Image 1 (cartoon, protein in one colour):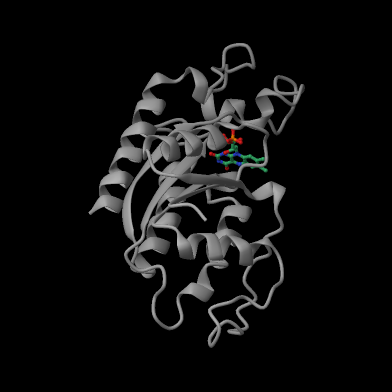
Image 2 (image 1 turned 60 degrees about the vertical axis):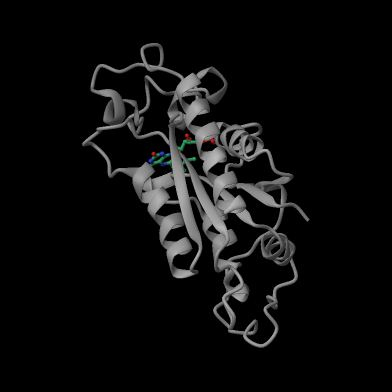
Length: 217
Ligand SMILES: Cc1cc2nc3c(=O)[nH]c(=O)nc-3n(C[C@H](O)[C@H](O)[C@H](O)COP(=O)(O)O)c2cc1C
């Protein structure tokens, strides 16, 4: 069991979300553990209320294990991405499966929570909803409802899948034009990479330090 739990909902190996979550956890200077949800099985909540008396989910999968990890931790870093401009399904299922910790003593209360959200929607774009903010809000409102201390967030630019699919310049459904303008091509569209973004790394490290302060009180 670790003091800080980092969770990534991105299924891509060593994705921008993974790297940013790990950077936040490391910057806390506290012992931490990282979980990649696509390596685990976490079904969504069944709303059966079978956890009311036990604080334990009736579903026997990794969601139970993660809830025990979170129960023992002081801080949680939630990393997600934004398919269809909202928080991805794995990350949402992970949050839902913390519901057993709610009854009836508020076992999440007072713990620190932070969000890392990777989005393909460029900042200031009017073509699509503000996916990064919507993703952060999903985590922030969860923290609010559970009485957790929401410490802050990092929103980073990710890459639209059309950049790497091989048909990005030829496909009628390519999102490149929608996101970067009608003349955008695969070659003119920037590739975003956490490892090369000093600014995002600095934001992640600052967030980690804020988590440390929250944990130290
Ligand atoms: C099915 C699907 C739909 C997507 N739709 C959106 C979207 O509506 N808005 C958005 O910001 N990004 C969208 N994305 C792109 C992801 O947000 C982007 O791939 C993200 O940067 C991936 O983060 P990662 O590098 O950490 O895996 C979509 C991705 C997938 C796979």
